[in-house]
Image 1 (tube, rainbow, N blue to C red):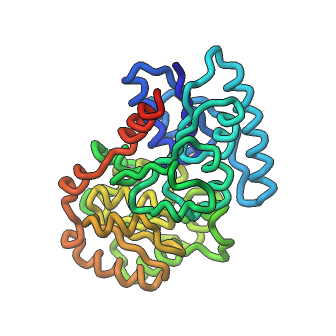
Image 2 (cartoon, helix red, strand yellow):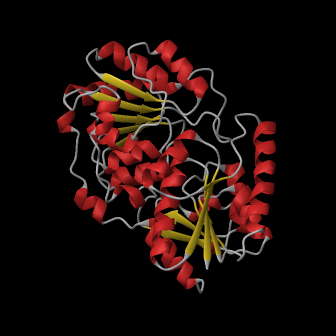
Length: 350
């Protein structure tokens, strides 16, 4: 029996890899598909996970996204249709192409989702799912535009628990970036500026943040992880004293050795907080899961305005140890979404 997983981003690759390993341990055959993306493929390679690359990313424009999606859908259709055995289940973090193909071929679908603000993707995917697994931080009403609440399964945790609970940091990332364990490191992950839910930007808040922090804390080491080539080029031009890697790096290990983690999205800031590193989410709106983690005692802080985030960062960097928290006890109390997936599949008769 084959279970088919699809991953479109680095975060999705991490969660789908954990799901794949779990189902293999239960005796299932598995297939993991992804699209061409340097960081996503690098992560899967580092984990030793087999995968098939199908299609690519369409960029920021609507036409580009649509064309890439249609092309990928046809390639996935051929790949899945040509299998000797039809998959018994499809799992993804709401992949539009894979969900549509699975539905069309009569394959049961279980989706993960923690982004109710991703309205366009959710409208294309959630209505087709048998079940959607959602952190309890997000009320069912947040998805009311796309799915009946009776098909939502809540769990007491966040997606990142799946790969962070047993994570062991690797010091080699410091050597890769010519850093020392004694450096005051600030890890910054850029915005997902080309996502359908993100407004058009004239500048990047994370770069404005980094520039101010470098001005006010001259001895810190800022590592800026760009998502796209144009972001990387812009960051190198504006942030001349920052480290802007060309290649993928182990951001989870780097978060562990950092004094502060800052993200223009949610995943990297949650990863940092689950390690006990003070983490800032610099996003245009508050995220349910981040607010929930903060209430649970994890060191994650949300800001909409760059200047507010900078003021808080300066406080943290003046005494980093006072903001770092041992979160092992809190982390062990959270549910692993992979175990929830297995439970839901069994309840469906799998």
